[in-house]
Image (cartoon, rainbow, N blue to C red; front, side, top):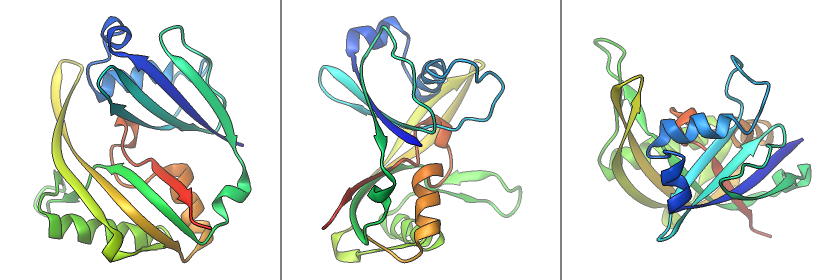
Length: 195
């Protein structure tokens, strides 16, 4: 079973919990799954900032425990949800490429290159994008701190319509995410079926 959870976190509560960057969110959300210490991160999440609160979407194979610092609603994702042929989609991704000289990951900038990246990922994950409906927002640099070291991700929000071509690959993409930095709040494929 897979669960979709929505958390609403007031800005004052987020400040009190020191939720100032993607790594802080990851550590705090990890605590909603007790007994997972040392295990691989199996949940995907996305944080959206509104005027007074943060909205967090969390996709996980087990149901999270309710925190005292947020309002939370959880529902199971029924299997039939992934059996439509077309969906409206949105994904906050961290598009990267590997530099050939040292294999270091570098962020991708430039709309043409970003469009190429998302089309390539779509093909790898069993779906096709409708080009005339594709909207690319970003890129935007997002800074985080881990073990007193500064890091940076490139955030890009892709929206549009997708057509499923390989159901198994598509389902894997939904459950496992797309692209890099998934444990930092990237890669969650948000879907709305088109009937």
